[in-house]
Image 1 (tube, rainbow, N blue to C red):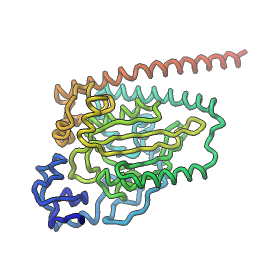
Image 2 (image 1 turned 30 degrees about the horizontal axis):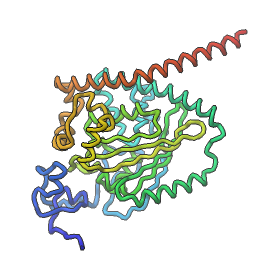
Image 3 (image 1 turned 90 degrees about the horizontal axis):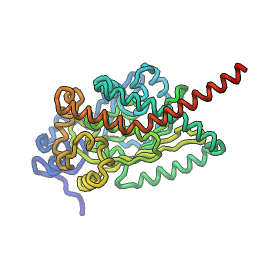
Image 4 (image 1 turned 180 degrees about the horizontal axis):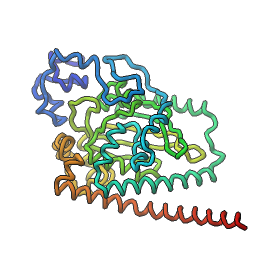
Length: 387
């Protein structure tokens, strides 16, 4: 049966190119928790569908606007200028590894957020970054000593497997796929070399595919969670540095590119691929929208997999409550500057720092043992030379 069309869609549905109805607020806006902002599309503003500005794009990138609607068939992009880009930042700043690790997102946003974090969280995040750098270097050496014959040599076979993988994920109806290829620069900092995204991932994120790729290549993907959830997301990623596969559930914006957005729930999964040297060469990311019911079931059965650190901070809200509060949390209640001003917010940030410190203790001990062994080995070599 052909899909019925309404004579006039609301502004949010028109921008998202989603099905609308004649009710105001429409059922889609009500479902997304933004019924108050649902209004008819103003035909005088149709120009917004033709040209979308991408703000804060760095001057070295030529693409500053996205034309739409488009037939855009590019899914794969080379990223040769990432090394030059990172050389513009202070490599001694504690947040520099954080910026490089999350290089697809707005670097200025990450840096500004790092500056407003309370000292307790700055210290624990900085400690986590340095701890996992020690463990990572040791792991790479260990992998190389045991797997030196497993180096990736046949790039043609790798390309064949990637093509098959691409075809599989292009047929997916519910999960978006993104693959990043990495290279290491002199200070062991990974930089992106190549990016591949499936068509569905931009649909899931609520923006046109070319805009999605433009934002990724120009490091201009906006923060799509509340600031507090975003900090927890980054810390969780750091603490899972030694895990090859990770799967977590988050509350996010249902549109990453529009100023009109509501709340959605998503499953984020990722896996890492290393070469025989133990060097990260590829990371794969999967994004799947989930229902409130699935999110709630995960929250009740495995809370550590759902909005990491939320339960440690005393936030045990249900999926319905999280959806209801999202706009308020995003714009005010869960911004770091606002939380530092309120007693409840300060308590949450203190609990977060304590929870991270508790989880980090195990890894700090491992890093300390590695340092002691390396120092002992260095002293032995020095003694032999003196003799």
